[in-house]
Length: 148
Image (cartoon, rainbow, N blue to C red; front, side):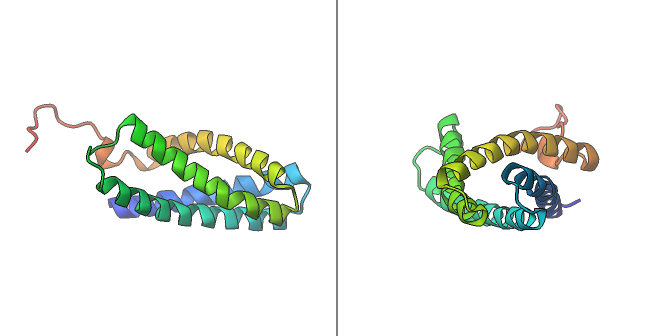
């Protein structure tokens, strides 16, 4: 599978499974009809995908203007904090309005989603790699090969 196809398949499957889990979980947590929380899960997923693209574009533009190249721990921490913080700023009002809950309750729900997605991302990536194999970037290299 080409790298682009792999990324598209992985993103679509990741979001499909997430929606299938998050919709019913929100329904139980907030005693809302599943049709409503499924719709919310689709909206949240769409926002997350759009924010992912936009944030990474913005971050990479900023990163390209930095003096020190590479991705240090600090830069990775800034990336993760910026992405998740920005996503929370966007998702909390959406969840608050959709579920008719306070912004604080939406913040707590967002924290729950953050924990879920941390564990889910690790488990999903492991399962995806088991089914589809590792990408070329993660395969073992021939130690006798000489880098050009």
